[in-house]
Structures are given as C-alpha cells and as structure tokens.
Length: 248
Image (cartoon, rainbow, N blue to C red; front, side, top):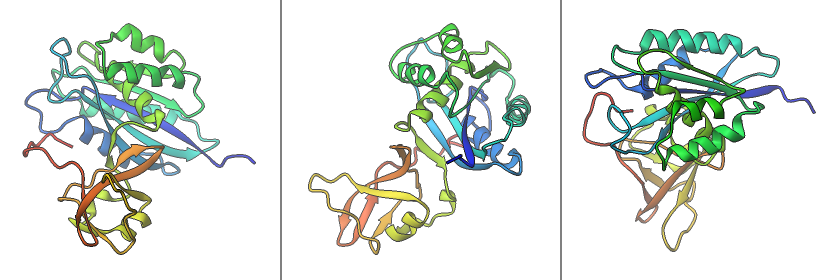
C-alpha cells in the first residue's frame, strides 16, 4: 500500500546570543506558522547535547527539531526554502546558526542518528557533521556556522525516536496544570508510571503537570513519565527551570 505522507525532520541550532529575547526552541516553534498549507507539524523536540567547556553555547547547549508530515508527493524544496528564510530572519547578531533537513527516507539518517548520539557525549567538529549529513541538507547561516553541528544532531536524535522532550505537541501549552489521563490520551500522549511498583494510570486519574507539560520522545511516541502523588493522583517528572525569558 502506498503511503499518503512522509515525515521530514528540520533541525535548528545556535540562533541566539547571550542577551537575546528568545532561544532556538522558540525559533523552531515559530516556524510552524510558516509551513506550507499541505504540511502539518507533528511536534517540536528539544535535544540536549553535551555541556563541556570546550563547546561554545548560549545557555544549555540544546538544539531543536521540527517534525513535519507532508503529502507523499510533496517537494521538500519548499520546506527547505521556508526554513532557510526563517532562520536567516530570526537569528540574532553574534549567533552561529545552522540548519539541517532530511526526510524519513534520506540515506543519511543512520549516520545522523549515530552522529547525534555522539554529540551527547563527545566534542565533535563541523567536518563530522558534514560527513554525517552527506545526503541531507546542512547549511550554516552566519558566524562560525557551528550551529550546523547541533542542527544535524537534532535531526539524528529525533529521528532515532528515543531522545528529547517535546516543546510543542498537540496543543500542550494550552493544557491546564491538572489534567485527566484520558484527556492526555486523547491528545496521543501516553502516560507511564515510573514508580518501582508501577501500576497503569487510569483514564479517570489526574496528573499534576506543575504547569509544565513536556512529554518525552520515547519509541517514536509522546510519553509523559509520572510518579504517584496520592489516590488517583500523579505528578509528572521534571519542572520548569528558574524563570528565564529565553527558555522553551
């Protein structure tokens, strides 16, 4: 049976500077509004890369990947042009922005996945990023172009299906602080207990998200890890850092 859509991964990195009003995550999320009419965003995933004194970064050395579902016959050149225009318009002076784009059938994905994993534990070079993305689109858009490293890693880690947290997915930012498991399930967010004696959260149970609903990308799904907080009550793992206008 012929597929009716294809998935495209668009990685952004290093679009901000120390005094920026927004970070790369917000740049990635704003790209959603620029998608061609036939394309729909599946989610935007933040990826955490290695934090090391040898690596220049603005705040936490994270990059972001926009995951887009397009009609199977769609030409991704339109997406590439839109993404290039967006990163060039949104990147601030002093940044080193990079962009990576690959569809799910791209021959570079296995190499990008391995490269992304490497970026979580080792200092890598632009040359290694270019080699990993040999069949994908990879471009620098200012400064040192070091953002190509994080952009390639964002695509690889997200395409692996087992890394990162969603910063946009099915209207998660409109969710109330306390939300029923059934409602999360309706939004295709799987709720998983990480308690030692784990039982399955029931549809009628309530999850306290602490005002920060950020599912993980596990098994190519949006998964919200929770821990028990009382009878019929759960609490999501993780919470927002101290207020910072650039955080996602």
